[in-house]
Amino acid sequence: MKYTNQIETHMEYLGYIVTRNEDDENILYCSKPGYTPFMVMVDDARVWFYADYEVNTIAKCNKDKVFRYVNDLNSNSNAVTFFINGDLLRMSTNYTGNYDRSMFSAFISQIEYDVNDLLASMKETNIYLGDPEQAEYYLQDNTSNGAWVQA
Image (cartoon, rainbow, N blue to C red):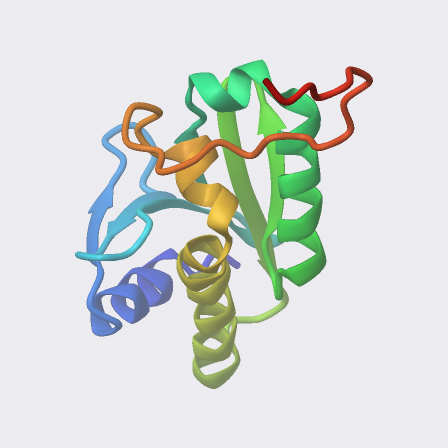
């Protein structure tokens, strides 16, 4: 049984502006000022949450460091899985089982922490997702093979 109407009502109760997809009524777009917007897909087996951010040129040139960053995100995440796909940092998770208001609220709270607070707490977020021209500093790898010579 799909719980699209309950999910939509619940998200609106939590302050999200919810828009249904024109082609598929089981796809919801949820946005809330100051929060990462995400898409919610509801089917008979699960409720799937998805969000993404485009990585910047610094990230594209430092894939090894970005993968370390993504591993750190996943190590500290409560519910969301972070991964790189092309030029996007993708975030997804699933709610399975029957819809229960209190369980769903607790689950949404964990998603909001992961895609907002966790991202904000990682210094690399501004480096890899922010405006590369505005990055205050660039993470340099201190494992150089060259010798430093003082002039």
